[in-house]
Amino acid sequence: MCGIIGYVGNREAAPILIDCLKKLEYRGYDSAGITILNGNIDTYKTVGKIRELEKILPEDLKGNIGIGHTRWATHGVPSTVNSHPHNSGDISIVHNGIIENYLAIKEKLQQEGYDFLSETDTEVIAHLLHSKLYGSVNNTEKTCDFFTALRSTLQEVEGSYAVTAVCSSEPDLMIAARKDSPLIIGIGDGEYYAASDVTAFLNHTKDVVFVDDLDLVTIRPEGVEFFDIDGNVLEKEKTTIEWDIEAAEKAGYEHFMLKEIHEQARSVNDTFSGKLSELDGSVNLEELNISNDEIRNIDRIEIIACGTSLNAGLVGKYLFENLAGIHTDVDIGSEFRYSNPIMNENVLSIAITQSGETADTLAAIRSCRSYGCNSIAITNVVGSSITRDANNVLYTHAGPEIGVAATKTFTAQLIMLYLLAIRFARAKGTLNVNEAKDLLVNLKRIPGQIQKILNHKDTIRECAEMFAKERDYFFIGRHLNYPIALEGALKLKEISYIHAEGFAGGELKHGPLALIEDGTPVVAIATKGHVYEKILSNIKEIKAREAKVIAVANVDDTEIEKYVDWVLRIPATDELLSPVLSSVLLQLLAYYTALARGCSIDKPKNLAKSVTVE
Image 1 (cartoon, rainbow, N blue to C red):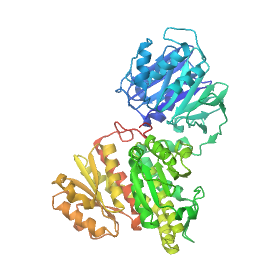
Image 2 (tube, rainbow, N blue to C red):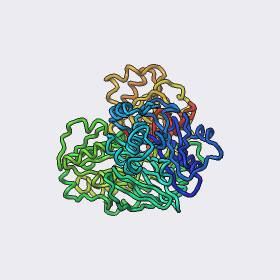
Image 3 (cartoon, rainbow, N blue to C red):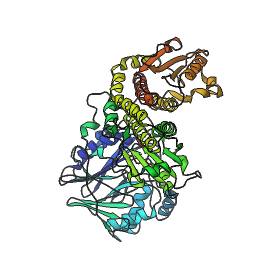
């Protein structure tokens, strides 16, 4: 995944592009570059973060149109020559995505005399566009206009793209287009933006248009027009973003991740706000266009997700089966469409994706349509691609999340899964009114209980620092706590670079015990519930191998200290809801471990915020 930005307006483009790229740096940070259109193509790019790019820009760089890029390498190692923008003659482009047939196009263009300087797939777009515009590498007379040439180029490439292009022979024009990669147009006061994410330009304008697949956009100082791939004019609706740029700033916190962990009391409340009724034990999901009869006819639920969202989906499996009695499978998005799933109209597919742009999840939910399945998307981003591919959309209300490691979006996803499972259970009659009331009352207490965990973070920090130099970490849990063990391990490995693995407690004797030795830290999620005694048995097995056990336990558990080396506590709550609280605690454990190790917390190496290419 990479970040792209384009600007057309009446101000100097270079400082605006740099400002916008800094907002996009979480999408990629191994290299960066900009092109300014000022009668010529002036391109500057370098390896490293945006501050390295700033150092090489001349002070007198003039021009009111420009494009920029911050890269996360997919084709070609991080290097200046592989950095974007890529140029061909008087053309410059930036690109997010993967061109799958680039080798065949590259060979054809090399035969035509085009020289390739980089190892990237993107460079073929620049040269192919030049070939379409001028007919050959040496021609200076156009065979068509720039817009027609780009349309023809995009019809020939296969794969995914969000691309922004400029040409010095058409000095008042920037063109943008997308297929399977996010692209948003910002509409300002006499100025316009094209970006991978609204956070790039949100301090300039809140008015946006979400670009659909196979759309092209022409952007001139006098306005913006939208077209389909065949060149037909399209009418688009403008959307106003409701949150402020301040929500995406650090607000005094050392890292975005810490800020976003602390925002969870609010984001959880915002996600369920207005949807709960303790009076009759009901959940109101007005945006869900599925009747009670249709819910009763669901034979199976298929949850599709990747990464952290997959761990949320695994919690969802337990919820749908325990509360609603609906058999639920959970599949990795990248594997689902290469299998031969048994799907029909009585299977409900649920796609979970923070960004709404995760390539594998998008491809999987699209394949579900061919089976006639109804579908629900759970996402945090209004207008994202998944919202157009699913039959129903349930928005979490976590606000912008800049840290690469998902925190508040994960707990918001969990909350939405609780709401959906309770809604289904009430429709099917598997959860009576009093049971639902009790669950909803406890759910409404979760934000305050999260705050209690945050108020005692010094104990978590002390524990993290104690084990920060360890080579390995293990996490175990049972039932609902098994996915949280997976998520706790994922958080730790993502940002601290410690080898961490999560296991179901009952699997210890099937292999993992061989890796546990004297002093190895093991986090055991031992909250009260029907598998509490089982996890205690697992803890005793671990202690017999001289490992150090850190227990995540309820605040009122007076027994656990007898069996472990360290206890980190969460407020007492319903067994089904404890994963939310355990998650917040484990996020803090990962954060303070990474802080003690001096790691790059918001921008961990080799990772980016959402994976928009397969």
